[in-house]
Image (cartoon, rainbow, N blue to C red; front, side, top):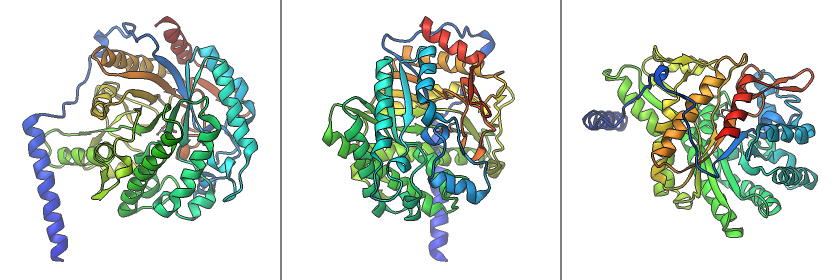
Length: 445
Ligand code: FCB
């Protein structure tokens, strides 16, 4: 009883302190541009800047058997099924990349294809990924390989997955195997996609596998992901120090709905710390949630930035569980529900800059089935990016999410993020108008 009171009092004190410091220093402005006065075509990018798109194995390949397919069935979600049949059609899909003039492509490896049963390796599947790499290189496209993008074998999930650090050696063994096969040609590696999204959606909100809802478990998974990244980083660098290894970090910004509310403001700061700050300081200090994770300290050659939006915090926050987002009056709501807030891309870059490594935009895009918003969305974000680079930020690439419509996790096929529209009956891909715009921007700059 007394201990609980003490902890609560300490928590309140910390919140009070953060609020006070934030007010005094005015550290968290929330800029908004007057977009009607901005020439969105006035952009420039440095020589060698890479243009790309991104996908993930479970979302495009089709016919997986992994933690996600089990979760889809258990929760009655729309099944991923054949997805984009990319496992069979990847050569044609890579032609789509060439048609867009891409110079970089981010994709992920499906561990459950390589090790469907513990200890049993399917080298044929690895050979397919190897052929993909060759094909991309022959097209002049840099492959960016993600080792873990939300999906893994179900046998590993059954053992507790990332919730149990005793499971990490099998994850590391998988990463090493892929690295040994591809690192003679792949120079840019992402260990883990969006550690905070993975842990929060799977262990707090329960919408992702394993569908749990426990804060202590969430914190443990977050820390184990940091540890897993650190161990894999060191193991792979030990094999080939010349490659570049990073994490794809989802930076979602949290802003108080009402600036002067004693609830909204500290809530924003707390969530900002939980979502973004804890991870950044984990890399900087090798420590997370009161425990040392020395393996992670400085374990980063570049940082991948996945940027989508900001979240307005306040008493309505629990509605987020049902994907109900707030927005400012001048902001446009996207199909997913969250607002389009391109100005936040600059803030997200500034947030990552203290890590002192180059930034790659590993994801940015919008769900927009009828393609009414994507062109504006793309152009605003590219304008913000161009300004950030002009101001001296070291950003090396932009990968649009996504090349084509695909399986959008808990939302199934309802959210369409593709530059190419996919007809899932016929598997036809059709370039959207916004895709033409992206192609033309890339050709011009
Ligand atoms: C990100 C995921 C990516 C995709 C986009 C829309 O959080 O990394 O796989 O689903 O959101």
